Length: 364
Image 1 (tube, rainbow, N blue to C red):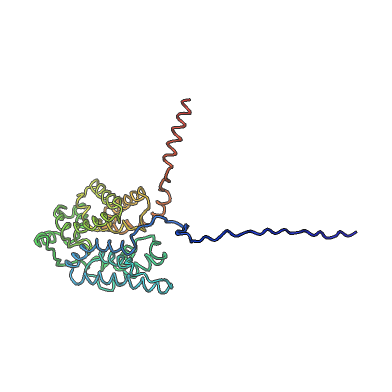
Image 2: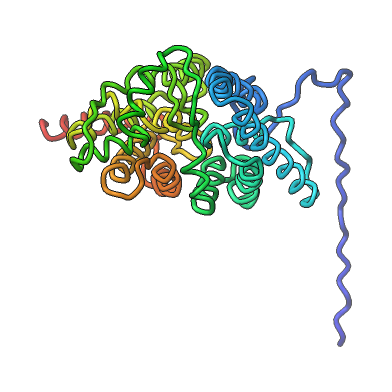
């Protein structure tokens, strides 16, 4: 006989809703991704403080270089800001030029250029710094290399003749006597680092100590931002006071160059003051995005910059090596971050407890 269909009675239970509270909770638990610890500092504020720290050396550099130096700095900033706005519009992204990051990139680039460059070169350099050094990686916070140095490297390679012949012929140096500069220029027309290279080869006789005062107070042989080591250090002091840079990078960078240069026979104080070492160590290598995250990683990064700078100064055709040294170590930053990691909180204490427990076990 065919089986009769079984009918199952479905019992339904009525679930009573919890009574609605008379008052809504005052605060709700908000769950989100890290970072959970936030600071009042903003991108605009940080960039503003760095620009402020660069202001003394910028004003003095423009004073010494004249109108042409002002045009170089201005065109660098215009090229950077215009390119940032243009690319962000093409990518249908919010235009963020008011965060001052593009302004800072253009300013840093301008300070690393000679004061007599034609206006179109810093304009092109500012555009390259943003396009190839920043936006091509996704924008602020994603770039691997320092954008200002990327722009300068392209200019240096593409227009080397302009970069080596656009320095001041009759500079103003109000804090040092013009006779001292004329006395040095009467011996050699080379830059201080190039002159000391000739001294090492035995082709020139001039004491490195003669350069101390000009390099400290009124350097007429360098780029716009190299006019005064004192003003660069004043800017660094501002950033350290505000907690915007880690002291390990400038100290380890400059310290490495000083020690290695002394070992190789160069005056250590001259090695620290000459060229772009100070502005590179204080304002370029300390860039948030392009240096390692951990304390030991920063030390490794800075020492690597110092070693590369010294090698390029002593054993290459270039009298200066700060730009290429920082860019080289920027490329190694992801590798440093991969292998130099911070120890999670509590791990050291746990290891000590395990070691003590093991000792007690062995004793028993």
